[in-house]
Length: 305
Length: 324
Image (cartoon, rainbow over all chains, first blue to last red):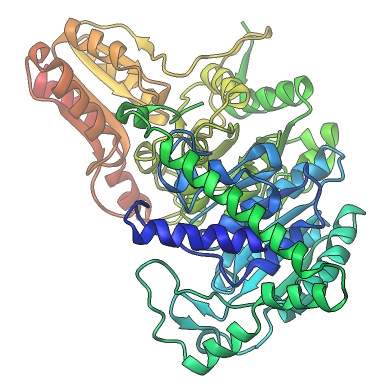
């Protein structure tokens, strides 16, 4: 989680220095979701991701330096500079790619689950999406299909309260998106998405069900993004008290306190870990900054396989 | 040589590829053992390969194509059926933004070997939501191949190529072609993409046509021969990739180009082919390019209305005479 947070802070800093082309959607604040879920997955399990996807990539084991290079549009990035921040994939670690069309990942994750079933394997697919995506038709189509075919998918809704600037309560009457699972005859669980241990436990059950052929689960993680929707968004639509309250519930701070209180980690050890993470991120930045841009005519490559 | 129907040729291609490769599977609405496909292409396949590999789906076009994408990027070769071409609109994000762009957007890391079979075309009085010819929509999407077989032989050979390939293919069929019979050899063959077929040789006018329009163009050519007008009919067989050279070679010979296409004329298949020839071979043209296509209307229901908008043998003959 700390690694994701520092990575995102570094991306923001590079953006402020005008080194990041385009836009960025930072995962800071939501780290417990990706980490809590992906800690239950094997390397050969799959995930699908969204425009706010850096955290998913890191939690699934993708390399920081190649993520950073992709964000900067470099040839050494995961997608050779063709995808950017919103479209990172690493098929070597089962990261099937981030789609920037809200809700588009759900059917693709379901299809990966179908593929696992048809090949007679026991891999699991975790599909990350937001509260906004839960209002797309693809949410209904994909979860229904996964349910009726008992596919090994866990649908992980990162409910960060706002779809861009639109507050959840203005576009749906029910508070819990997890309640929609009833309609598909599958379990739906809402969990504190800023409590990594709580997410871990819920995901563990869901992954277990999926792996043993019992079918999908809808997991709703209640969380909050620390920054605005994207680079240009100062998030003025969010009440100050609300932001302050969620900052108090910061998942990293909470988990660190737990670790220290239970003496699982000592302060000195956390400092050592934090130092290692910062070094690793500096190395990733260095790698990305020193990498060349793709040559312009590479734009014409990879249209067809 | 034996003759079989277009739908049987498609079925043979599916059956042979499913026997050859266990990763090939079919999914779509009512394609399984109970209905066997709206046009009966998948008849008998569920009995042979089981319900898992010939998979009936809910009415969820977007998820059908999404499922195919997810399966294709994880080692399978799905063949999805969209019951009517018009309904591809419901799955357009998954087709155009996901299937077509995945290979490119992720820097070539993964292949997307999937086929979307769907029937286009008017002529059976089922009106505006079940009769369109929308091939041109998909030509505007880099990363997709678009196949347009007009005969049982081409249908079988192109479908096998599509299934064995590494890219997403929109495989366009035509409702009126399903019962049409033609020669199909018993032995194994494939038809490559990007290779046009000269369906009839001629010397005075080149007609480029696809799908059911090939048959109308051939009938028109026969009729015109009785009036000593020699027409060459070129069938591109795939619109993406397009065999430009075959069209240009024919234009070099005849000096006259006509395109017959069952879609709306504006920004349609005929517009693309005409523009290509204008750009690359205008010096060989001795007359303006002629386009016979549908007017810019939805497809109407009532038979006289519908027949009025579909290109006919008569309209083809009339247009040829204007430039011959």
